[in-house]
Picture 1 (cartoon, rainbow, N blue to C red):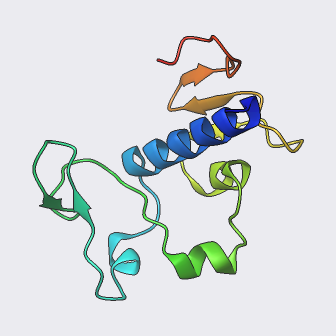
Picture 2 (picture 1 turned 60 degrees about the horizontal axis):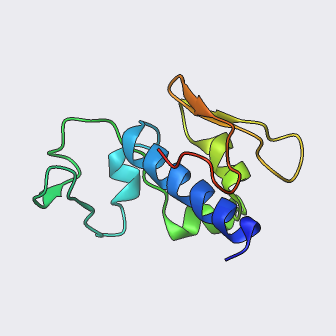
Length: 110
């Protein structure tokens, strides 16, 4: 696997984790299409409305409307997540005060 592929996977994982942990889009707007979001964070399926943590849900329509096609763009729409968005590559990502800038091969994955 190339380093670019590994970095892309890490960014997507970080973005999805951030989206799952942070508040943002109202739950009603996310479920307006009669879709049900199941959360398995506690090793059992629960409705997103029954889980006692804030979450952000992006619909496919929203991602198309705002042209959300990169983790760098995800940082813009996810509260509590920051990163260097000045160039085409995020040099660091920060989720609620916990950050990393070590995305190289051989870095600690935790």
